Amino acid sequence: MPIELPAGPAEPRRPFEVTGLLVLASLVGFFLVVAGVNATMMTMAIRTMPGLDAKSAYETSQRFNGEFQRMRAQDGRGWSAEGDVRRVDGGVRIALSMRDRLGAPVTGLRVSVVLEHPATHGLDRAALLTEEAPGLYGIALGEVHAGRWGLGITALQGEETVFVSQNRIALKD
Picture 1 (cartoon, rainbow, N blue to C red):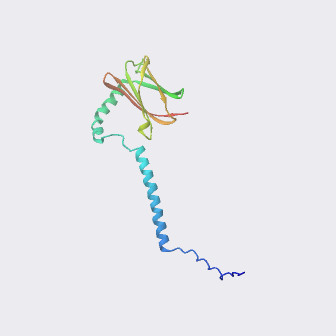
Picture 2: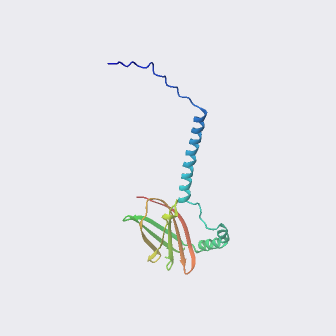
Picture 3: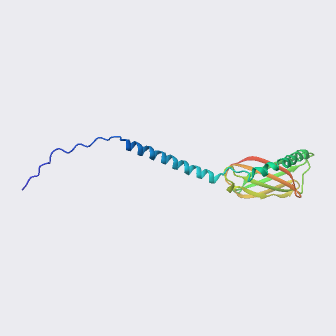
């Protein structure tokens, strides 16, 4: 019966060396990962909020004087508006009371609201309020998630815009 003897001592392992090629590959890999993450985050940010509030800045600037006159006329009317936004049965109830400078209800308006999400216009909700009592306009909207929202109110008398208000609200769960 033959006996096998070990073939001598095992060859020692070569110690780990940092070479120029390893450093180059690590740096290139690192910057590729950073660039990839930045590109992904930038794409997601632009898709959810493109940054545009006006389609044409020129047209917006041309309407400035007319808007300024409308605001002066609104101030001259002395109307006041009191709004109430609250949660009701999983949805949101918006109520608006419009009064003139003497406290009499302002009736016969066509009042619309836009509930604007601060990050994406895809979640915005627009609605036309109904006059439920003299000077009291309201509507119940369906499910709206909690958080901060913008509430834009526009009231028209005939075809003339007579009242505009922009507000920030917080909806709690």
